[in-house]
Image 1 (cartoon, rainbow, N blue to C red):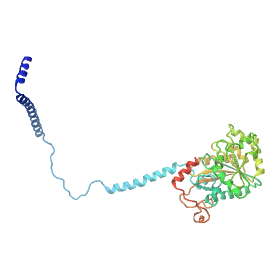
Image 2 (tube, rainbow, N blue to C red):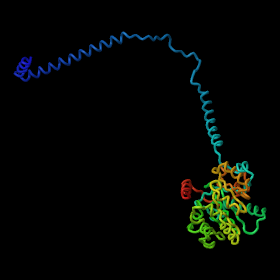
Image 3 (tube, rainbow, N blue to C red):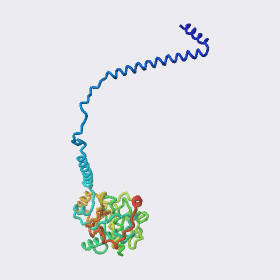
Image 4 (cartoon, helix red, strand yellow):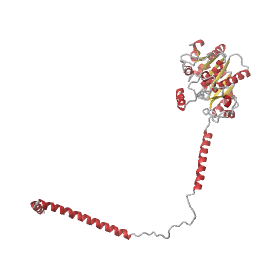
Length: 379
């Protein structure tokens, strides 16, 4: 076979070039013709199969409109259902938030939960600093603190407290505005030409130094360990008649220092120097320090904050008062924002409405971004 193939190839090679090219073309033609013939065969087979498959579906009659209208969709039912769901779902969401929210919302919530008197309601402080009364003495916020001052003077008179008077300010937890209220209540007393001092007795988490921009190098702790005298720890402020005593360095045993006899000596010394002594104490819901300091207070102010203080904390306050752990307690609602704009609590420092026009400085409106920056600065 190989010999024959070789012989054929040699024969082809001896042919002229035109004949060689013709042989190649003839070979390609034969190959293409065979392929084309095979494709035609397959197509014919497919057409035969298609023709043999008959459909078993038959049209009996064409559809006719007999005037009965559309069977579906029922648009009226869909509209009613959409309206119902559009109202029901938001209502369920609102009621869910209302029942789940367990925080104090207004003065009525406080009145329903306790018999302890509510002597003041303070609005929202929108400024970056907490010296609200000193910076804007004619604002509605300042008037709210003046109303609290009047209520306190009535309480002192009712209890027949004469001479120097002490006021302890506490709350349930941090963040309810205890220090903010201490500073501004002390300020309204100082502005009435009464010698006033704020004593920072929150030995665990002091904040007074930040508010008055004073270094917390020496304070109550230094006095209690007999490292400094009283005159050495008293700091004058930019407000006339108002001094401040900082807490000093954070001690390892704050409760023991407060229980010491030196604490009583401190209060007695302060009573000889000042008309009003404001004790800024820790929250009673977290530590027991304020309960130990209650014995030195003529009146105790318990600060609650709108949409922050839990209602359970008021129940805890009732228990404390019932046991006698807090004496002569009264409540102040802080951070109140009357969204309805109707003053149902006339006389508590909010809801003045049209009567406030011309009497209070409204202050400039703060933009959204400035409010965010102020909150970040406070943190």
